[in-house]
Length: 316
Image (cartoon, rainbow, N blue to C red; front, side, top):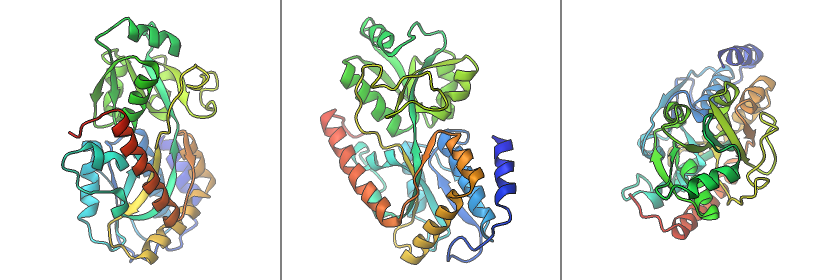
């Protein structure tokens, strides 16, 4: 990872236009997951690229917990001067319907900047699990009425697990963590029995023989693990999964600042080294305008409301 970051830094060091209309100062990028996970890694690659494109230093601040609500509250309370951005996850659209006292009524309250991309998710089990296929896992779960333990580090991972349970009719015991980096030791050791999470979170463990990937939650197989079938190929349907990563600004941020950030992010995403680093995380790149991101947020907010209703999930 550090080698990739160094190569990327060298490749883009020559390009230094002002990356937004905000004054040259320190930019805070608030990340809702702990250090070391897939979202944090992607955010740090992007932060480095943006810093190299302008005079502003970009500082990544990890504010994990509460499904992203802690990080969201920090950005809500920030001044709308273009100097604070939120690394938002698509799953954060579910905060208002999953929490009794959410810090916002809709993620649409933030000022949209741009989408960055979407993670490819995978179904992981420990390497010593008797389940070698999705069918094996379903049989194993049905033989254990108490349910298999399923760790989740984000609300999106929880949604993927709930969709799997509904489709297959099996039961799992959902165990929350602050992020993927925190649950992986329990998964590789067998204290957890499965996880639905970003492919990049478990890829190194799969390659090291500590985890097994049973399926990817995507329309096509992943280049990183071409031998692993999609969930559909394994005979299990899945619903839409909001796995996007995006930049949001505090409410009331001037549109010219948001649009300036969006333009410079788009320029950064054209850099080959940054693209390679993000694609190495199994992040499917898709920059956008602020308006397009706003439309995505509205659509996925409705998706989460339907999900909560269909699964009869009570706010906590």
